[in-house]
Length: 415
Image 1 (tube, one colour):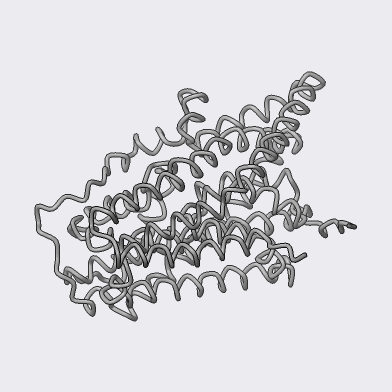
Image 2: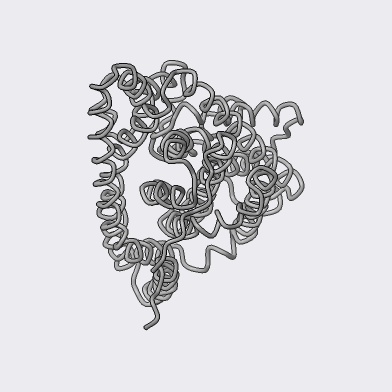
């Protein structure tokens, strides 16, 4: 009897979601469409993503503490951390400059001739987090329980690093803690397996809600922008794969196939967090060292959001072009560097990409109201950037594992 994989179920669910969404879009009244979208969001946002977020904080804490404790000393943590951040920095720069090149080549902001929002329009986006104080508030936790309750990944990582190093330093007593946390991590991964049974249902609900609300008419207005962004995303995927190929060889293609389920899940739900718990397992099955995965992946979800970097460049330059505000090459490069730096300080902030874009626009005297031009298609664009974030972090984990001689051939399972 044919067994359908998770990828197959998610793809079937996405097709069903598109069909259901189109039917509601063309047969329902505006009130019915809004009600339908609300009911669908209960399945995706209020149930599935909440279940995923339920396991993220304890999974990050337990796996990272165990991984760091097994590294043994601060020097090893610093060495691996340095290599990890080096890869993250290179990947972020590649994402930003690719967006710069494409947007200057296409000049989409001028070509689409969209009506500009009123000067007094409000985006509803809070940019107060973009400050020197806000940067440290989102890095250093004042309470690990508060950080875990709010799923502040970066704060959990900071505490886990200190906790892991301290655990390794107290000898035999520390080994008891490590063994306990390792067991807890395995339990959480089993819970994750149960949650993943809902993934196809969540994917169908998410797609149906978007299609029902937006409809295919949106493509008439924004089709060129969406198509250009998605094509550029594929270009970024190719760049990341080619950059990793000299390091991990042909296995980079095997890696993409290994994590394809999680890429598709992130795409369909527009949430890279949805893929995080299962991604840990997939990368370890691929042959990445568990201690490297548990260290690199949480950092990647704060520092290595390649898809978000690309989108920030697209959106910022698109809005500047739409308002006819010329930027010199020097200004564009400084804008990219600003985007890269400020994005690291708002990890865990809701709609973080939009917050960073809004704050950066004001620094270059570009009206923040221009974000309203893209809010209508943000969900569609978020699907592509979420999938890219998953792929980028998977490649980073494999590359750092290879650098640390921790990338092994996957075990052959005999059925």
